[in-house]
Length: 483
Ligand code: GBH
Image 1 (cartoon, rainbow, N blue to C red):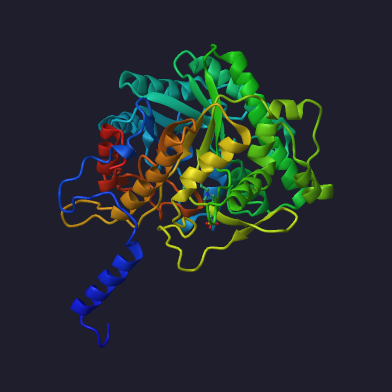
Image 2: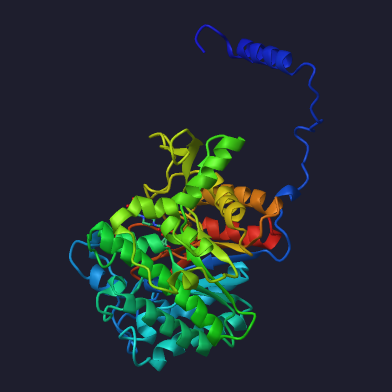
């Protein structure tokens, strides 16, 4: 403001603003007066609030009561694969401390909890003889949740493939073994558990595990085997949906948790909105699109050419099995614009200045929660949508008063829930929201270096401490509203 005093500057701005708004009438706002509660950001009654976790990330007890090793045990014990060689051997020790975790949930006031089960706890060899002690653990967790009025939503597979299965997802037999595991487990818990998710995030355990080598089992295979692996993964889902329906009472709800790529139109015009929809369909072609349409779309088959998956009779019908809900794990989107290329859209890269959370891949763009819902609903009209994961890492520190004031996580959550509210208020069938995560845990290849919890975990003592974000979430849940 060189050469212009602040007072003068203020006057200039006021004058030009007055010129711009002359002839336009604004509603009267009583500045400085207490405003009514923002009822506009209230969620509908019956909206389900929850938290999410995954077995290998929280349980520990890796060698207890007959649990067999999973590919993540093998991978994390291989030098150089995870941050500092961290493993899930102990993690949050929820295998022993689950009652404490249910208390945390209870204190938040959530009505639901999304957890996953370790396949190799229940079938130590992936197939064959079940291990009753494994199932028993989950039965106790379920009872503890129900006794506290918290509805369990269970994911059958969150990446911890039993290590004993030959070839892992390279083998079609793994899809069948998964369906058997799904049948057995849901048959035994189906009297109390009414909501099941087959798998979590196809991209991560297929592409990242077998193509990029970043996740277990750490392989770098070529395009043809990888597209076959992706096929086995969605086939496993489809066969499991059928197995669950055959093994559980009617009324049981079946879905999955998928990190479909989310596209946000650069500007909300018809052409860019259509571009976002096209991108959603094409970019998710091997996974969600195949599930929702019961086929691989032509553009994907063309793109894969000779590497396209080998599909057997009946596969696509199983893959396209009707779902009761689609769960979406949403963290960050891509921005997209319409163009005159063959595919009809172009991704607009993030500028270097796009804000990020503590993990470099979590670029902040809270519109993603609205567009995740809208793109999927406009394309495929699912019966119900859950946000099965949303949250962020933050560089949490315990201050001298012993508090963790994660105002950045609160910002992230508040903004995402504001955009989700828009989807709800426009009538999209969003039934609930699961915050990732209940507590800090084993963050896969990042080990314990990234914290996603709304409860802080001291990994030496395993003590859980609510962060500011936990207090905030409790308040939002109590008021059923963005706060
Ligand atoms: C979800 O994955 C998982 O379901 C959950 O288990 C996990 O804890 C949570 O999100 C937080 O990560 O390092 O740039 O190569 C989200 C999908 C896929 C995002 C792998 C991070 C690595 C990006 N993740 N990706 S990079």
